[in-house]
Amino acid sequence: MLRLISIIAAIAAVGVAGGGAAQDYPTRTVSLIVPFAAGGPTDTLARNLAQHMTKTLKQQVIVENRAGAGGTLAANVVAKSKPDGYQILIAHIGMSTAPALYRKLPFNPLTDFEYIGQVADVPMTLIARTGLPPDNYKDFVTYVKANKDKLNMGNAGLGAASHLCGLLFMSRIEANIQTIPYQGTGPAMAALMGNQVDLMCDQTTNTTGAIQAGRVKVFGVTTRKRVPSLQFIPTLHEQGLKDFEVAVWHGLYVAKGTPKPVLDKLNATLLAAIKDPQFRESLAKLGADAVTPDRATPESLVKHLKAEIEKWGPIIKKAGVYAD
Ligand code: ASP
Image 1 (tube, rainbow, N blue to C red):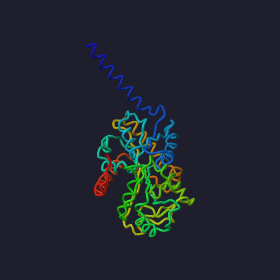
Image 2: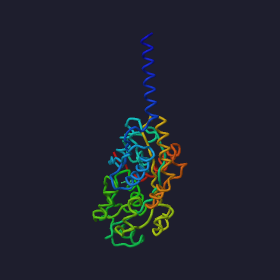
Image 3: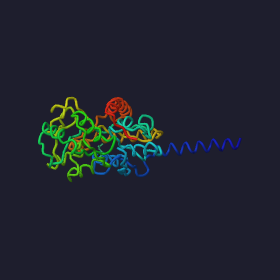
Image 4: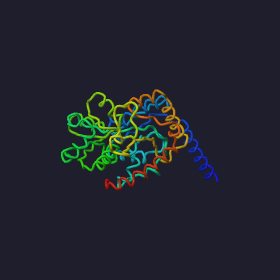
């Protein structure tokens, strides 16, 4: 009987300590894990957000770059991490394309995480090195088709948004171009400006500065509407690539089993960021759109993730691309 009482007391003590720890979260540095190299668009968005989260959580939020396998390496790290809220994943549209692209995906986007909410939508731009001869979209397509065997296109690896956008573009103009994977589009952009890469599709968060400085050529944006801060760039859709659309959305994830008080705190932290005019403005300058509060919720993220998995699965299967 005494033994039973002490076992019950021990279980109760663990329960209180566990609950208390979750209530006190965070008591130490939190990592925001970026699945791509530093200097790229996901990294830029994460650094803006981490700064804001640090203020709200009153604990340092540091950005950790865990690049590899088109973003799936970092997602797997977080899926297998301790469910305590100290490792947060910021992942983009790749979370919904990976199940179709990877034959052996080591995690399940729909069952291995807790969901915090969506963060921002970011359009992409189709860009080229400045030395590429064409100066408008029509000539560009003609040039690419005529030189498809000589050209290459940089991206952030299989499953990255840049990869997806490139594939869709190539299939639409029926020109298969060699692709060169990097650990992120930060390094890929450096290669493009260094003339080692001819073309790339990348988020405005990475390309805006280079476009405005004339360090790359731009041939269109990938969203259906023009981007408010880059009004001078026509959409690919309006230039003849009818219905072409790649809008990169981002969400925050933690490991399955993370306690509810931690999830609530992280969600409140995300909401505080997206409601802050300064945060919204810092993204808007880079062509990115912080989501509206109704989308910065776990329910909205799961719903969108499911819909996107259903949308992209058949498109990727039809394109016949996959990774082992
Ligand atoms: N956003 C890039 C992509 O998916 C990767 C990066 O952030 O570096 O192509």
